[in-house]
Length: 479
Ligand SMILES: Cc1cc2nc3c(=O)[nH]c(=O)nc-3n(C[C@H](O)[C@H](O)[C@H](O)COP(=O)(O)O)c2cc1C
Image (cartoon, rainbow, N blue to C red):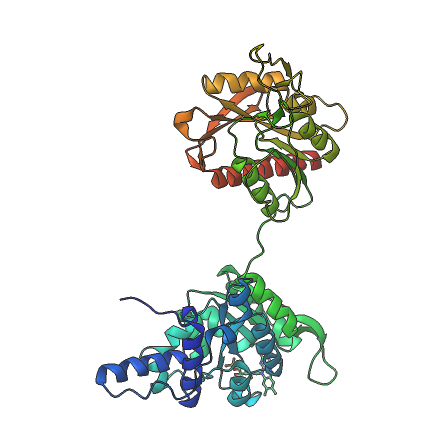
């Protein structure tokens, strides 16, 4: 049987459901069930009790900008003085585009009312395990699982004891026992309760079970003259911890590293209108630049003439010839890592025409070629500003591995990424690549052959290797 996720529905439909469920004092899910039941039974309410605003005007910022995914939390409020801080917590979670459905224990209702919690969360509030309205389809199970995270704030000593021991005699504890979601507890209690051996045991058990705790902080208690560890963390701290669990920061293993990359072909002029070129598209180098940038590096991309947009967040230097490319590469040093993926022309025309060469009766003009600077070898053999990790590319059409191995030795770089660019492979200009990473390992030359992948996947894999090598080196130098 298919399942339905309310937050993935169109904004207009969601707004309609929210308004209709509020009017009928039901949760949104219950409202959907009632609508479906009534439709089947042929006695549905008219579907427009409220005007449905156009989707664009009601879409949350996350959907309009694509900035952040929506997330939802079941917030269990326990019976402690700090329950009043949970009202602020609801507001702060909603500010972060996190939907909040609240459950109040019986004791919590002595401190905050379901009415104020419902007004702030814009959702029905749940208080009873044996509620026929929500239990006709196991509502406590839905509260336990129809969310991305369960937050308990304040987590009372009593709630933690129940949770640690698997009790389920009220809605809050039943949800905590029935959930398969991560649970974040914000304990709040008198310092003596917090330090009591029973609480210490329960906390240790919960942590062993993978429950995450925020706080408690130390400070003054509500009770006059009492101070110590037991104050609930501030709402803003709990909201930040919630967000970290819901949207863990993307790993940025190359943060603080400067990566220099070359890409594309070079154009070597014959005269002002003609040039010698090759079929490189620049796709592989551009993909590496984007992957290194996503890994947190500062990226300088020196690119020959290509038909690609500049990757976001990358400094791009556009050049034409091999000599210009070398100039820009040298200007970009120092760098921590250099990856030379450009297909640099080996030769240029020595006698470049100042004017367009004309057809004459003397026949074809003799084009004399001279060697271009070898960017990979030049940078690999630097004595002062040599990047600690220099990676070259070997584009070969025959004897791929042997040629790449001898290139590694000849050029003095650290790794070679070898790829077969024979026309049959479709690598030049295509979207996929099959590469072999050739490096020195324990005095031997090692060859890692990767399966065929898109150029983006090759880039991500290569950047992951680079990040591991950089981390290993910094660990070595630290020890
Ligand atoms: C005024 C007052 C304040 C309380 N504050 C706390 C507290 O901060 N932390 C706590 O663990 N229990 C506190 N309690 C005790 C709980 O309310 C009690 O253990 C209750 O059974 C907890 O129920 P619950 O865990 O289902 O919310 C307080 C009780 C009273 C009367």
